Image (tube, rainbow, N blue to C red; front, side, top):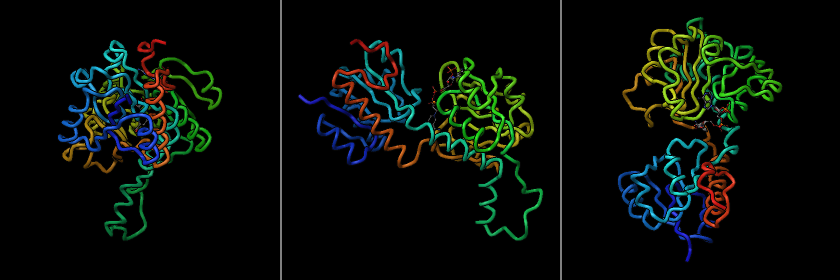
Length: 325
Ligand code: NAP
């Protein structure tokens, strides 16, 4: 009998064909109330799940007694209760590496856009308000040569450091669990404690995962250490930041600007003060959102799922404790 797979994300025809060849597929292509009801109906027979952007908690997964594997189409795994999955020996896999460069590109887009006020000034042109040459009131600030501060020197942090160091001549400082000698050598980067980094970086960039340890890591106290010229960039997860404290830091001039791809609540509420601020560039969680990279992520997730359902260890297993050869 074929394994039963529930997709809660649409895949390309090529990947659908691959899954259909080896499994029976139920597709839930919209996670609205109807879609969630369909998911609940499908869970009791599911051996494998594949998708993204849905909190799969114990309450939901208790409906799936046959579940063997979840293939997340993301590198971040904050939507999963890893201890619960491990206890049930459900193999969780993710899609690292294939999205690293694209997400770092997004980070750099936000750095440039917020420093050079690209969105604000492009909106001015579009509104027909470009009547004369811009003056100091519209000037931005340089990116090249400024100090790039990276919090979370993993795959994406390193790709950001590469762009800053080689492309823009930026001194790189970073904070992580532990120093990274290879990164220091490649990019002439220097390790800093978190408070030191917040005080010294012109661009404070978050590239670390959302975990119990990092939730709310950047709040009022941390913004207070930044300087009026600091530009704050978040391409990690919204909940790493206390958003009310961020709004206050922007309002009071404690920091200059922010480039944000992720938010405490997504989609961002229409009444969020961040929507009204000229010194905020907000993008709708597009870190990895290019045609090429989303297809590569989906391919990686399908590979992981098929490996797991075939009794093999998936290449990108997150909870190795769930694996029993
Ligand atoms: P990664 O290679 O695992 O890197 C994460 C780094 O964060 C690690 O090097 C780790 O340091 C560091 N870190 C973790 N907890 C920390 C803490 N409490 N203090 C300081 N450093 C800490 O992961 P990645 O592939 O670069 O992805 C990072 C995150 O980016 C993902 O988890 C995801 O949430 C986010 N992301 C967002 C988008 C988007 O669309 N905006 C796209 C892709 C990824 P050590 O190595 O020292 O342990």
